[in-house]
Image (cartoon, rainbow, N blue to C red; front, side, top):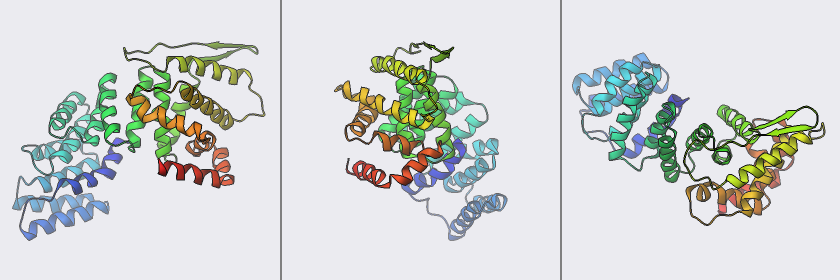
Length: 341
């Protein structure tokens, strides 16, 4: 969930953004007590401490941010939006974090257009912050403004290519734009970064459904293949691969036997996809090749396709986890290689 992601990451933003304005020791103590109570889940008591601190300094951005974060955590988005707005009255050390809370609260309240205004204004001040770009993309996706969502996600990933949430959301956005391979590529990488969470299963679902998109078995001997055109005017440098992938998955369905498990099919198709990428290796220096194509091509060339596919699907199929347990040396080799890249 979006709110959970915010709670887990915003403390990093605050740590990097600087310290609070100089305040009396009593003020600092009250805010610190509020943070400790918040971390324990004692939100009402935390709010009391922040309110006491704000009696000392009503408009302090530090205390108002912490109060807004607690309201947001409690699901009181209206109060979170109201309090975080105080933080945004002028640029300060907590403006960035306050903008993310404010925009997220507006989004949760069903006011995505206002949320976008908050994010875009903050992005004028902090254009290279990947969290702002990601949160703006979440809202653009909700508004079905997929091109703008894609633009923000490309920025987010370019700034932080280990941010699994951005890869997962880019996969969802490209699925909404009917771009088959461009849906699958970020999902592969997102699952490499985060293979064992609850949302890993959700994203494996999306990856597999996209892999077999447009393929239908019609009776015992007939397989129907439907190719879909992209819903945007984007250049599709993977159109030839999409056609080959559709034929490959159709063949897999046509040769369906009890001797081949779903996990084995997934590994086989993934391996062949990486082979296709390797054959058409692009030198255009595009985002899609720099971020995804080159990595998956190198995985194939170094003979890691099998272990990679089993690794990213370990939460989805028990068989994948079992395979990894019996092939620990191959998994260690993959990660040693990845760490050297």
